[in-house]
Each structure stands twice: as C-alpha cells, then as structure tokens.
Image (cartoon, rainbow, N blue to C red):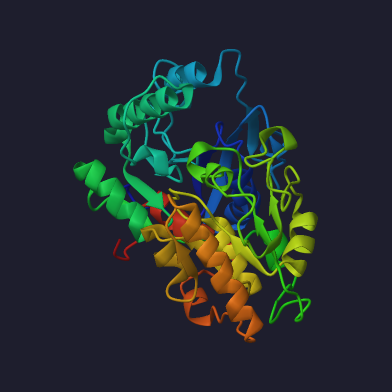
Length: 368
C-alpha cells in the first residue's frame, strides 16, 4: 500500500488520454470534487490536447499542463507510458485517470474504466484490435509499478484480477453517481409522457465503438412488427447502423441539455453494448426513473437487477421481443421502481472523490 499522508498531502492528476465523451463527462464531474477535498492539495494536472477536458481550468491554482501529441495516438501513448514516462517522476502520489500505468518513479494509483483491457478476443488485423493489444501490453508491463487500482464494479474487479492474478487485493471498487448536469436537473420520471401512445420512443446514447453493438440494429427486418416509433442513436448520420430503418434517428453527440430534454420525453433507454466497465447510461436511466432494455450480461445485471428487460446481444429477434415486452408492460400501466438499485449508487461526487483520494493517499482501510 501507499504510505499514508497527512491532511493537505500533495497529489498529482494525470488524464492525458481522456478524450472520449463518456469518460470526459465523468471527469468534468469528478475533477472539481477532487480539487475541493480538504485533505489534499492537487499539485498538478496533466490534460489531453483534444476534447472538452483540454481547456479545463483548475479551481485551486494547480499547475495545469496540456500533453501535446505529435504522433498518431497509439504510438504517442506507447512512448508516453514507457520511454517518455520519466517526465512524470515524482515523490507525491500520481493518480492516473486514463487506464494505463506509467513507467515512472513514485507512488501511482490507476483508475481503470476500459473493459477492453480484460476482454478475451480473437486476433485480427483491424486497427482497433491492434490498439487494444498494444494497450494490454502496456498495462501488463507497467502494472507492477502501481500500488492500487480503482474500478467501478465488482464485475470489473473480478475480471481484472482474473486476467492479472497478481493484482488480487490491490483493486478497489468505487461506483460513481450520474454526472453533475443530471444531478442538478431535478428530472424524475414516473410515467410515460403520452399514456395512450401505441409505439415506443427510445434512446441509445453511445459512441461509435464496435463493442457498443450498434450493428445489431442492422439485422432488423424492415417489415418486422417492431413497436418502436423512434430510437434516438447518438451517432453521426455517416455512421448510421441501419439506414433501412426509418425509426432509427442518428442525432450525433447530444449536449447535457439535449440529453435532459431527451430523457424527459422518451419511454425508455436501450443499451446494446457487449462490454462495459460500468455502463453510465444505465445509471442515468435509473436515476431519472426510465425503463431499461439491456443485454443479458453480467455488467447489466449487477447494475439493474431484476427491474430491467433483458435480451440476447447477438440476436435481433431477442431485442425485438424486448421491445414488444416493454410496450406490453407500458400498455398495462407498468413503470419501473429503481429505488433498491440506486441504494448502491453514491449520491454525490464529493464522497466519490474522498474515497478515491483515500486510496491514493493509502488511507483506505475498507475492504476491496
């Protein structure tokens, strides 16, 4: 374990590779909470050179530096985590918020959100697969330099320890609440907007990654008796997974305000992803009070329990059956009650930041 530090201990934050929409939104909620913790002083913050976090401004005058990349991202990350990692040497704890350990000197804790680090796969020559192999190689080589890891669910902890047995006992589980923009919205759904509607309005918020499984929609028969009037998918029109389906609407990335508006109108959330370290949209839907249709997979069961409607992520007919099931339930006046599931979700970001910093400072005495 990392040696305990006194109140006001210095901590450095490293998030140079966090530029995806989901992870960036998480950190926009987490970073202010980390900086406001009275037991530490955030000494420095290393930012990415692209995305919404590239312009983050410290609230407490931490030294903020943007890590500039001049090579393709995968090659740049390889060098950053290995040959160029000495620039991140230091005596104060380094909290890495971007999945991959650094080959540098000093106490280090890594927050792992990337499920691809633990998934099994068959090798192929697709660029995405080669990048995943590279990331796993970096993780495997550098993991011995890390004092502790933080993940979001027990499912991810078990997978990480199974893939890397020497990490057993070093992996801490800390869940997160919904983003600040949703916490502040006050949105709470108790029923359909239109109780007489005969078809469903749904949303699937997810980026364009293969494991998000948008391709399942392409296997829908245009003539099927699908009860969906509209499925909002947050992909660009160029990435439309099923152009033959008039009810699939690609909107591109939705801002927080647009997401609040969508959540206030839809009849439920659809989640197609095959792999997740957490599944933030599921937490968001439960917090708002929406029905959920999601894959019959461990990560979804851990979050949603028995209240979700499950389907086989490899079978479009199974997804169609889930749509029909939801329509039937809503026609009978059903609406989900997520109270028991939300008990396991933190209520604010300050408590999450405090727990994470306990781990970083080596003072977390709770079981993992």
